[in-house]
Image (cartoon, rainbow, N blue to C red; front, side, top):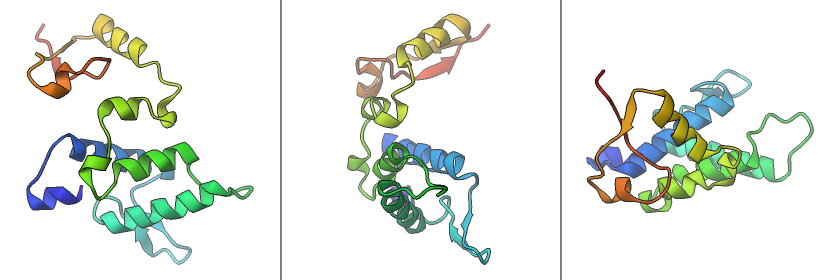
Length: 144
């Protein structure tokens, strides 16, 4: 995230990292190249290239052509949000969980499965983010 270079770090940086991870998963790799093999997007090192690629995908997903290899519109909208230049515009964990891109995920069931079938336990609620209502939780490994 751009603010890391200025020594700032918080949840918004993690959300930005989530966006980069989703971008890599959806596009098939960390580098996007043009037809000559020149790197045009390297999301790990160039915020501006990543944003430009997402804006291009947004234009393409608004009017998809048959056979075009473009991430779904909901994914592009999510990625534009979480990679915003302004950390305050990236949203909260709760807002992202409710985003259309994640609509098929049953968050309550996922949390219930983690609580029932793993050695992970919710961490102590010691800050506002962890104390927020809903399925967003922090996890710590429970000793056996």
